Length: 416
Image 1 (cartoon, rainbow, N blue to C red):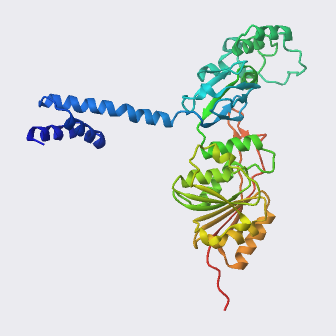
Image 2: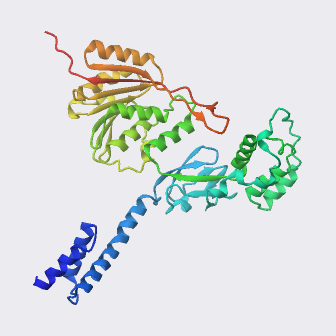
Image 3: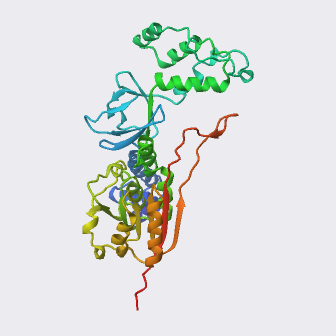
C-alpha cells in the first residue's frame, strides 16, 4: 500500500464513532481508488457507513417483529389470551371470530389489531379503542355528585330495541356507534356515577369493539397466558410462582439443569429462557409429555433440551447446576433419582400445590443429610384494583398458589 492509500485509511478510521463500521469503511476505501483528496475519503467512508447501517437496522427490526412460522401470544379484549401460529392454515379465535394469522406477519410486537365480523384483522390505534371517549358528549351534569342507590336493574332502562340494534349491526356500523346509541338510549345514563359509566362502557366495548394485541412470547407472558387459560384446573401454575422458582434456582446462561415439570412445561419454558442456547436441560418424565409452553418461546430446542424416563436416568452421565421439580408426583422419589447428579452446593427447588408432599420431602432432606438450609414457604400474592376512590383487593383473584421447598445439596456423611 502506498503512502497516499495509508493516509486515506487513517482518515476513514477517524470519521465514524463505531469502530467496526469505520474498519469496514477503511477496507472499502482500500478496494475503491478514490481521487486521493481528503474530501473524497470522507465521502467514501460515509457512503460505506450508510450502506452498513440499514443491514443492522433491518436485523434489529426483525427481532422485534413477527416472522413467518413464529408462535405469538395475543392479549384479547376480554383480558384473555390466545395463542397463534403464524403459518398457513392455522387459524385462531378472538371474540367468537376465526382469524387468519397472515396479518400478524411483519407486525411489531405490541401492535394492536381490530377484529372484523369475518375475522379480518386490521391495524388500529389505542385511542380508537378507548371506550370512555365514545359517549363523552352524552354526559350531563356533575357525575361526581351521583350515586347508584336509586338504580334498579330491571332491564327496562334501555329504549333502543333489539331490532334496531340488529339493524345497526347488519348495516355494518362500527362498534363505537353502537355503544354511543346504547348510551343515548339508556334512561339511567345521566344518574350513573363516573365510575359506573366507565365500567359500563368497558363492558360494552368487550362485546362490540373486539381487538387483539401482539405480545412477545417471553416466559413471563407465556406463564401468564397459561394461568389465565387454565385457572381453576389442578395444573395451573401462577406466574409469580414461576418467578420465585427461578429466583431460588440461582441459574444463569449456560447452566445445566435437571427439570421435572407437570404444569404444561411452564416452569421448563422459564428455565429454558434463562439458561439460553448455551445451556443444557434434561427433563425427567414419568409418562407422555409435550413441550407445549416451550414451543411458544420460539427458542432453538435442538441440542438444548433432552427428555429421559425417570426410571432409566443415569445420574453419572449428567452433572447439574440446579434441580427443579414442579410435579404432582411424590417429590421424594424424584429427589432420590436426581440428587446424585446434582453437584454439591447447588440448589434444589420443589414446587407443589399441596403442602403434605413437601413436608415429607423436607424431613427426608434433613434426616438423609442430603440437604441443608431447607426452607418451606407458601407462595402468596394479592392483586389490587386501583381506581379513583375505588382501590381495593381484586374480588376475583386466585388464592391457590401452592408451596415451594428450597434447599442446598451437600454430600451425605458416610457411615463409619
